[in-house]
Image (cartoon, rainbow, N blue to C red; front, side):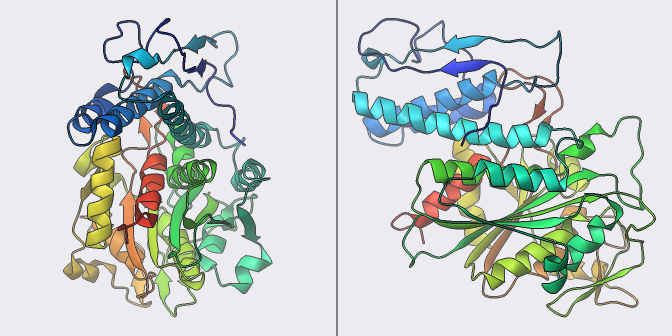
Length: 437
């Protein structure tokens, strides 16, 4: 099932003798494993639990960072492509708190989690000619073929019959049909509540008729970082055989200008009775997330997390190292705690009810962007909340600032970060564990 990721390959054998380059704090030959994100996690882990548990957490975090640091997206390079095979040996003598079995389990967990994040990176890094909405759906179907995941792709007439009019409207300007990709994984008891993971998958965002401008808009291909995070999380959960019930919902479309494209001032009607004035076609992500969240309620989800590269405003507020979270306080606290442990950090922002006045329309129930241009991340979340069924707990994660590294850093190549894959997987596992509800 795993996709091929970096041009550099790595293996992590566990040796029964104390020879070779060790994965241990004392090893001077070990690579820079975790950078500024994972190192603090390792230090905390070593002081907050039993010796074996903390040692396993330290090693797992270290290995994840090491593997992620080796990642390179080189598949389209020619003579500039680099290739290397790297081996790091884990020596039991350096980890006396852990049995050989615990070492092997920790190594495997780290590998699965890193590969889930690398899958997300691969998807986000792909150029739009290789990953349009139709190819995205096909790639997801191929990746999860032969697993317990049940897959259904809604497109064309099926979208129309289910009144997924946001997807149909946003995707109208592209020759590649929009779709809602539904992936159901039932690895736990039927009594467990269903968690919906909802990802925005705009494979290229030109802004629609509100066309984006700039000397280089290559980053517009990365507007499906939320969708990639959901796919990476599901990959981790399936490969770990996690005892969870998850519905992964990917709203996938292009947002392009064309004679058939959605026009500003158009009205989209949703099956919950709301009519939306499209004041700006570059506010498309919330229009398709609305479809997916309404579908999550129909599936009976008890909780929903939507994750999206939604607003430039969030990057201006928080920078490139932390994403915003808005919504249910309890879910937010747990996700923030998880992010502090695994390095995929979140900062809570308020859902200011009085800001809903920004969404008033002269001729529809609401508009898709605010009137002032201020507090964009909050107003986007307020819009999305209109499509969350009262029966569901919900949070919204705006990861527009954390989707990529603009330049190479010590723990990652430039390009997609894979942000969110481990965060979402960890949350799903925590919620299904005893005491997690």
